[in-house]
Image (cartoon, rainbow, N blue to C red; front, side, top):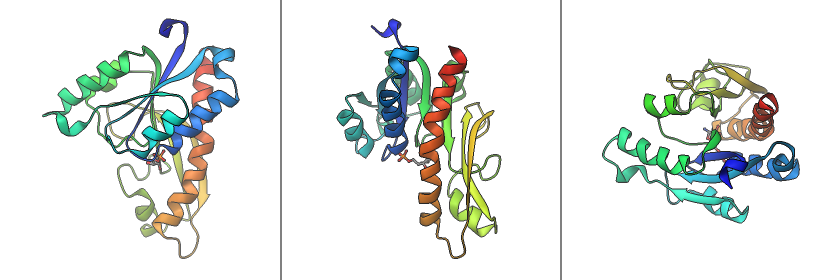
Length: 198
Ligand code: GRF
């Protein structure tokens, strides 16, 4: 059946809230009947990721490729690619997937690999984006959906959303405010990817 569908494979490491909003949008907006698009699988590098149970509850196949079991990034990425490619994906979605990918992996999925990053790229690539934005005295923060290229947190922007940074904000408060926007723009960006392809 895989060839009859445009499969999405979503990679997670944690709570999987972005994964869940994409999967729910796919159901609610009937992506399968409109474009033949379905979320085929959710794969985590962490066995304890809460998002795995969330995915099962949504009726999505899950798999775990624990990065700690591999002696190199290349060996881990090779197994990850093997698991992903079982679903012949039209699109691979990184949703809180906290691993740096090898150039070979990125090349393999060139043009069909996207990520969401909790900053207004090109500002604040990498980790601890919210605290760094507060410390820098920024008055706004946000999130970016982008195509993944070999350089970490670079690649063409597909969507962005902006939120204010408020007086006395903590990183946690700002992260929560940004996450509400991630949940809006990520499903929209995935949908737009398939609308463009249709
Ligand atoms: C999101 O803020 C994402 O941008 C960041 O990690 C968080 C993942 O949240 N990289 P979730 O797993 O989608 O709930």
